Amino acid sequence: MIMGIFKRCFVSKQSLLQADEKNTMLKFATSKVLYSKQTKAFIIPAIAFLLFLAFWHVSASSIITSLGQVPGPSQVWSQTIVLVNEHFQEREKAEKFYQRQVERNAKKLEKNSDAKVKIRNYTGNPTFIDQIGTSLITVLTGFFVASLIAIPIGIFCGLSSTAHKAMNPLIQIFKPVSPLAWLPIVTIIVSAVYTSDDPMFEKSFVTSAITVTLCCIWPTIINTTLGVSSIDQDLKNVSRVLRLSWMTNITKIVLPSSVPMIFAGLRLSLGIGWMVLIAAEMLAQNPGLGKFVWDEFQNGSSNSLARIMVAVFVIGFIGFMLDQIMLLLQRKVSWDKTAEIR
Amino acid sequence: MSNAYLNISEVTIDFPTENGYYRALEKVSLGIDKGEFVSLIGHSGCGKSTVLNIVAGMHQATSGGILLEEKEVNEPGPDRAVVFQNHSLLPWLTAYQNVELAVDTVFKQTKSKSEIEDWINHNLELVHMSHAKDKLPSEISGGMKQRVGIARALSMEPKILLMDEPFGALDALTRAHLQDSVMEIHAELGNTVIMITHDVDEAVLLSDRIVMMTNGPAASIGNILKIDLERPRNRLELADNEKFNHYRAEVLKFLHERHVKKDAA
Ligand SMILES: Nc1ncnc2c1ncn2[C@@H]1O[C@H](COP(=O)(O)OP(=O)(O)OP(=O)(O)O)[C@@H](O)[C@H]1O
Ligand SMILES: [Mg+2]
Image 1: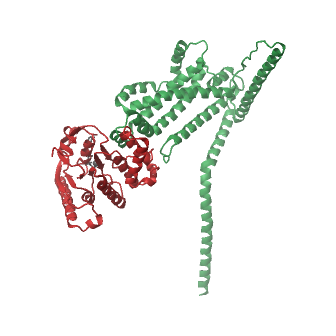
Image 2: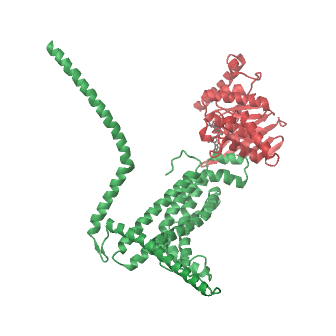
């Protein structure tokens, strides 16, 4: 009997304990959920990145090249700062150069108000940051021209299967051609055709931009064609029943419904264009990132490898940003706000 | 027969397939009077949509043809508006803009800007959709989308309104509401309507005649049932109406018999 009471006491105490345990476990579980969300969003990528840096650091120090040790993360970082500083120094120099001229001209005018004065342009070397600017302008020009050509062609091919049959072999043949193969052709044609005494654009710019265009035109054509040819049959029927004019059909039905596919193509194109540009600039000597890499490679100083690696990161980062901007645009113009776009 | 408002005469159609031609319809003939409400009923795949599409001008009959007011029909046009089964609204346009697209193409020359605006609003009102006219299709229910689809078709002032299972995708209650709306509109405007349905009650409730089609291949019209019920019709009163139930039974019997035949074959 007494034992029984004891037992009961014991049991109830135990169940109490259990309840307590359950509570803490519950708390633990909820904090675990929160924790796992944070880890996914931030901690895991951060850890991966740190691991990458560590791996890089260790493996870099064990490889000796003709230019010395392969630079590790810290050297690359310090070169980044050097490159940025060089830019500001160069800007300062330029400013001083212009200021000197202004002062000199003012003095000249003081002596003789009829004196002819002139401001000469500063002809310093483009800095790394100038080169980034040049590259961006070049790739966007090439991409813009490509889009202007590719979207209409894509729409045309999507609407007419005859046009598609006619275009398809050409697309398939030219799509895989490397920019390095296009470049000599483009260079020669540009130098033959683009002749003017006071050209608005540098030849190297035109050559690079055209090479970008040639390489990034295809994904947009293919995706636009696909988007236009897979318009919902019901919507096509609506267009037929309403007897929409050709133009209304394009603007009200064809374009809106293929916008997601067009943008998928444009994103691919811009990615390819950016990749192609670096190679094109190297060979065409367009003063952008490609030329920067090439010059550093030719230069062969002890810092060259680190500086090229800075360029690699910048190229990668800009490529990523360009893609994100396209994504933003795509979200903005897409009518289907619920569709997940990534 | 030949002087009917809409004359479907001996329509035969062959669809090209991998192994030769498939004859979907054979010698389908039907005359429809102005203001008449006709339902097409039949088993799935028998060719109802094909009949409708030929009338709409989306398919060409292999032989035979369609005469609307004695003029031959061989391409789509706004005089034969279609209400599609799955609403087919343009997802990037609001309810108002969807109707506007139709009104603009039909009345651009004849109506002024403000008249067009009034006309769009009037049609949205007709289907009780004025309150949601600025919503996108993705923001309204299936029934509401179908209402907008009907408003779009009505706004073209078609000679014939063609509806392909207009309420097929809706729940029973919404469907009943829309049926009532269609009856109201039909009473008010006196449209000529061809409607495809799988719902026997719906067919009997709405129609002046029910056209029952035989199974394909080479489907044709099996039987035509005239529905002689007073309008306006009320679904609750008709539920115990002897005539109504008789018509219902007739249609069911037809469908069932055809089904058995098909199984035996
Ligand atoms: N464009 C086409 N090409 C080939 N065959 C077709 C075509 N359109 C319809 N058919 C065939 O014609 C027959 C009738 O099709 P239809 O769509 O008219 O049937 P339905 O009665 O509307 O069926 P449901 O009730 O399922 O909508 C079917 O066997 C179908 O496979
Ligand atoms: Mg059908």
